[in-house]
Amino acid sequence: MKRELVLLLALAALLAVLPMFAGSYALSVATLILFFAYTGQAWNIMMGFAGQLSLGHSLYVGVGGYAAGALFFHYGIGPWAGLWLAVLLCVAMGLVIGFLAFRFGISGVYFALLTIAFAEFTRIGFDHLDWTGGPGGMFLKVAQRDEWDLLNFRGPPVMYYYAMLALTAGAFALCFLLLRSRAGYYWQAIRENEEAAQALGINTFRWKMLAVALSSAMTAVSGVFFAFYYNNLFPEQIFHISRSIEIILGPIIGGIGTLFGPILGAAVLTLLSDGITEGLAALGWEIPGIKQVFYGVVMLLVIMFLPHGIWPAIAKRLGIAR
Amino acid sequence: MPAELVANVIVAGVLTGLVYGLMALGLSVIFGVVRVVNFAHGEMMTIAMYATTVLFAAWGLDPFLCILPAAAAFFAFGYLMQAGLINPFITRPEHSQFMLLVAVAIIMVNGLLMMFGPSARNVQLDYQLESFELGAILVDKARLYAALAALAAAAVLFLFFRFSKTGKAIRACADNHLGALVVGLNVKHLYALTFGLGSVCVAIAGCAMVLLVDVTPALGPAYTLLAFVIVIVGGMGSMGGALLGGVLIGVSEAMAGLFIAPSAKSMFSFGLLILVLLFRPQGLLGKKA
Image 1 (tube, rainbow over the protein chains, first blue to last red):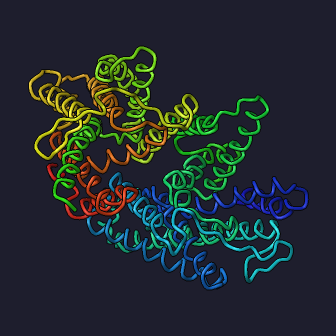
Image 2: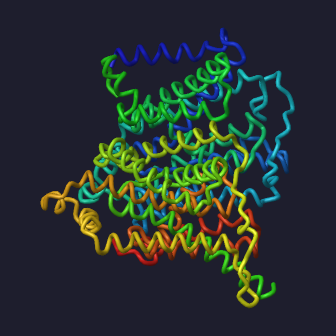
Image 3: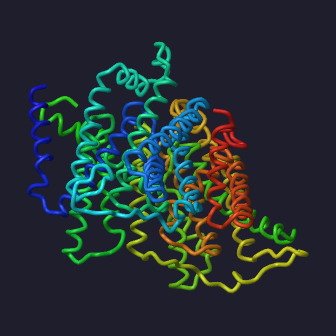
C-alpha cells in the first residue's frame, strides 16, 4: 500500500507542475491525454465494473457537448448551467438505453449493437437538426483567452489543462472509492457471473442501471468540456463510431476494470499517435491513413499478447496491486 | 408521388437489397457457426470492391468475371484469418473478440486509404446505363445482373449446407460444439472453412456491388453496420433471413431516400434495428435462442 501511495503522489506532483516546463504543444497533448483518460474511465465504469460493452459512448459526448453548446450559442447561458442540462439529458438517454436493453434481456453483442445503433441514429438526427447547425456544425464564441474566467470556462490553455486534471483526478478517486464500496462488489459480481449474482439476491437490474447512469453522466461532463475547449461541434465527428472506438481504446489497451488502465492506455495511445505522426513526417512518409494502420497494429498486438491490458503487466513488475 | 416512381424505387431497392443480403449472408454464416462477430465484414467487402476496380482497370475484366478469382482469393484469406488469428480467441470474452476484429477492420480500412486514397473509384461498363422495360417499370441491367448473381451464390451456398457432407458437418458444429468434437469432427478446420465461405459471399457481393456504387474506403464501416442490421432484422443464423433482411433494408433505404431525404436513409435502418432488438431479437426468421 505504501509503495502505491508513493508512486501515486509522485505522478500527481508531476502532473501538477507539468505546465511549468511544458511547451504549449506538449500541454495540449497532455490535455488530450487527460480527456481520453477521463472519458475512458467513465466508459470503464460501464464495461469494467458492470460488464456491459458500450460501443456508442460518443452519443453522450455529443449530446453533452451539444446541449451545453446550444444553450451557450442561442441563449448565452454559461457552461456550469449547461452542464446540468447535459448531464440530465445524457442520464435520461442512458437510462432509456439501459432499460430497453436490460428489461428485454439484451446483452453482449446485441447490447453493443444497440448502443451503436443509438449513436448512429443520433448522429444522422443531428445532421438534420438545424437548431444546432446541422452538418455544418456549431461554433461557440471565444470571449477571451488570457484570464482565468472559470464562470464562463474561458481562459488560457493552462486553465483547461488543470480543469481536465481535476476531472481525471476526481474520476480516479471516485472509481477508487466505488470499487471498495458495496456498489463496487455488486458490480464485480454482476460482471463475473450475472446469474450467480442474481441467485445471491442482488438486484442486478438496478445496479446495472446505476452503472449506466453514472457512466453516461460522467461522459456528459466530458462532452461539455469538449464543447468549450474545441469550440466547434460537428455531428459527423462527435457522434461518429470512430470517436466511440477512440474512447474505448485507452481502457482496453491499458486494462479494463482497473483504476490506472484508462489513464495509462490514454497516455500510451496519444503519445504513440503523436510519435508516429512526427516520426513519419520526419521520414517523409506522409500518406493519409498510415497512422491509423499503426494504431490498428498496436491494438492487435496488445489484444493478442496482453489481453488484460498493459497496466496489469506493469503493476506486477512494480509489485503493486491493480 | 406518382405510383410508377414508387414502384421503380421499390424494384431498385429489392435488387440492391439482394446484393446486401448476400453480404449479410456471409456474416450470418460466420456468426451462426463460429459465433464470432466479424466486425471487419464491411471492410472485407470494400477490399473486394477495390480488387474488382483494379482488375477492371488493368485487364478490362467485367466484374462478373472477377467473381471466380476474387472468390478463390477471399476463401483462402478467410480461411487463414480464422485459422491463424481468430481461432485462439474463441474462448476469450466477447469484447476481446470484438476488439480483435475492430483492430483488423481499422488496419483494412486505412490500408485501403493508403493504397487508393480517399477519392471514389468505380467501373465503367456499357450495360450500367441500359435497362429493361417491364411496362412502366425500368429495371437497370446492372442491378438485375448483380441481384441474379447474389441469388445464384446464395442458392449454391444453401445447397452446399443442405446436401453436402461438409455442409452438414458445419451445421453440426453450429448446433452443438461439444457434440461435434465428440463425434470426431475437426472443428477448427470447419470453422476456418466457414469463415472462408463467408468471405466468398463477401467477395461475390463486392464484385456485384461495384457495378452499383462508387467505392471509397469509408464504405467499409458503413457496410459492416449495414450487414449487422440486416442479419439482426432477418435473424442470426438464418440464411433465408439474411436475404429477406437485405431486401427489407434495401427497400426501406430506397423509400426513405425517396420520401424523407437521401442522407437520412441509414437512420431508418438503425431505427428498424432498435425496434427489432427490442421486440423480436431473434429476427424475423431466426430461431429463438
